[in-house]
Length: 430
Length: 74
Image (cartoon, rainbow over all chains, first blue to last red; front, side, top):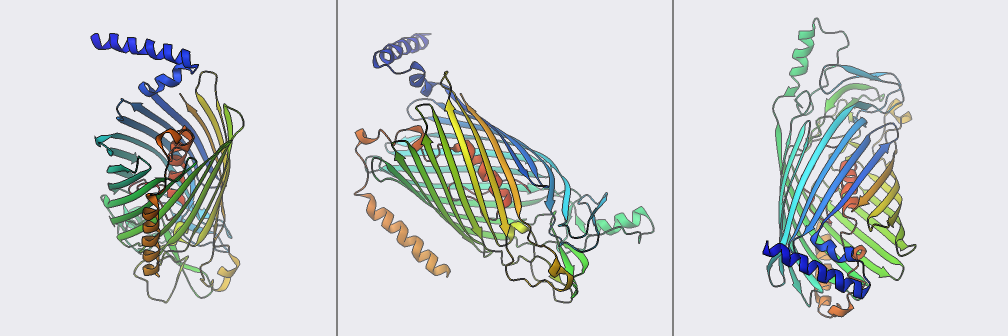
């Protein structure tokens, strides 16, 4: 009771001093209140995946630099994804991942598996507080669940401020446990897709053949990430961050829904096999971000270089320029450029008659590509102090041939179709 | 090639650290840096959404923060 009275007194004093200073009371009170950021995002690819994702993010300042962040994300995914099989001049028949049905793909078209339908829920919490003078610790937990996938992540980090808080050194560690239980079971690496073309005497015979290509039960993946960072104030207008991160994962890395075509010298598909990826991956990345305060806004530039033992190197440049139109509104153009080369085991198809490699995947996401994002955001502060923002972006991925020769009729097919998507988002903070 | 990258990264880190001692501002010069939009994670929700998209569509993730864990996104 006594405490409450004190709070009231301090609130009145704060209000009085704000009135004297001519600043809005709400801004002063914000530190003690919950701050909510919400957003709804639509991501739609032409003829492929459609995603709707909602975010509810809550921050609370408990005083004395004790902060809590909680976040809930829900998304639903529908549509089609490239299976990895190559286009052919004639109609192709494929078995769905569940084994319960099949679908056909017209000649000249990239095989897409159109059965993707999933809802994912992700919840996370993060606590940050001082440990001693100039030291801060932070710890968090995150869980994400969808029909065939579960991910649980824990993280912890330590920050140290130096040089009048102009320099901050950070070290963090994160451990992720992922469990996957694919629809229809886990395909045996390089096992042939069982397709019912009428060659089976009975449904049981087909089911038996299908089951022989599958392993039941879930598989796991463990990931440990280490992150070391330096944040440095350069001058009154400029701030920089420099990170090095190391990520080591061990376990099931296959995408159970991806396949490869085995083609003959004429470029005709003879078999469809399930992919096989290594069971380990070690990634290194360096990340550099600079923010620069202009009189009319903020320039944000970042560059990331990543390399891993799957021999994928990538470069990412991300830049946002916030331009304040007035005291309460801004526009923000966004340009992102991404480039990666192909994984060492990436193959758009396999050739009949040559021995199977140790690992192979035709997943376009492991192939050579460039991608560009162009976007624009408009944000405004409403009369009640809350912020409303709209974002519209265009994303285009352009896969490239990394030097694979296409035999026979395959030369006429487009094995590297571009992926085009629109991203639209509405955000509201209160 | 890997060795060259390692040397490059180490040199960048050393340069950054060596330069730190002479850089920075006095506490009363933080007016611009203290603005919400100057925080490194000022676009937190947007970045989280973008990370999910790019994690699902490209072979690299993380860098800004931890890369591990995730989803079976397609």
